[in-house]
Image (cartoon, rainbow over all chains, first blue to last red; front, side, top):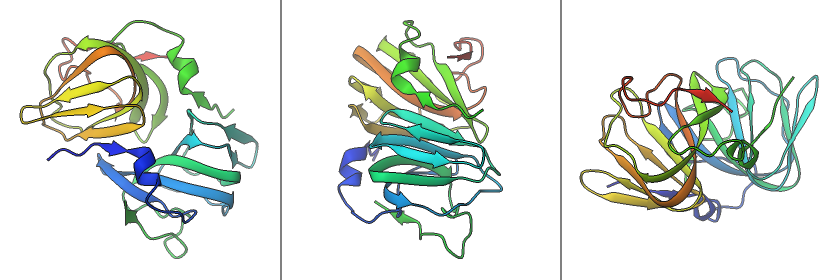
Length: 117
Length: 117
């Protein structure tokens, strides 16, 4: 049975920040939605690019050399290996795509558990 | 120089239907936007899942056993190998993710050329 995924409906199922929910699988990747607010940790991913699509709110992606500010309908790919820190001054809703099992902090010891929504 | 991608801005750059524009690269995949209207061809991809996210309009994804209808903010992954035909009764704007080089018809002989926007 094919299941379509409504992003807003999935985002309505939880309220925790920085706790991504997997909503679909795609070529070995998890497609996730997440609510964020405040400053995340500086981190990088050695083995994967990091795709952010803003669905609601305004997100700063701080990198060592520059900061990119994304609004709704804006997308950014942090290349693998590049240090970054997402900062949300208000509640922000995001779509993320990462290889299944990627730790969100770049480090399995501190990563949020992977959850389905 | 990091480049953020505004989906609506990219979609404003062209008007042809069924002619995807690559807007970002991610882990060997192209992230694309496309405008579609009418019926596409029945096809499948042997080697990749096919991710559709509707940005505007209503898209039917016909499959042999069922049809999934997606509205704005709704996402669907056609698993690899599954025959499908996208049908748009009105103009529809989509975000697509496919491995770089994937023919959009499933067949290099009939595929749209890969273009950047």
